[in-house]
Amino acid sequence: MISFTRNIRPANSVDAAALLSLVRDCVAAMRAAGIEQWDEVYPNAETIARDLKASTLHVLDDGTGIVASITIDQNLDPLWLGMGWTAESEPAAAVHRLMVHPLQQGRGLAKQLMLHAENVARAQGCRSIRLDTFLQNPAAMALYPRLGYRRTGTAMMRKGEFVGFEKLM
Image (cartoon, rainbow, N blue to C red):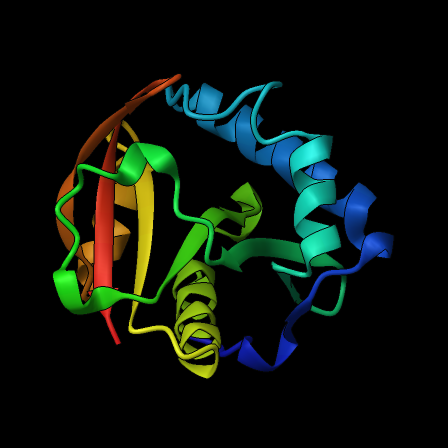
């Protein structure tokens, strides 16, 4: 596997169009696979703009353009309250909207982004990373346990049931 860690960087406003294209391609691929996790409502241009403004969006550029992205912040979704997080895991970072272009999947890029997220969380003094993933997304459901994340519970969201995952730093 080729390491792309050195090509992960904070996103900026110039990246907005490429990020929206990445979202569209990911939504189309998920729908083609029967995964109705994302749509025109989420994630959208406003979501991307908010992440850019907050400087929490990071992109992986393979030299030809943005092929993946991830948002790393400390915004814990209120729907996560009953998920059984570890008591000593605060402060916690949160991962949102991990995306890898469909033509780039299977190359270890999601793992690279998650390792990057762990480094960012440690640098921010976080004791854990929390996230949720759509129960009906088999690739995501398999990824996080492989990276040492434990299931913490479930929450019902607009699109259905989501599973919480947590990793202590």
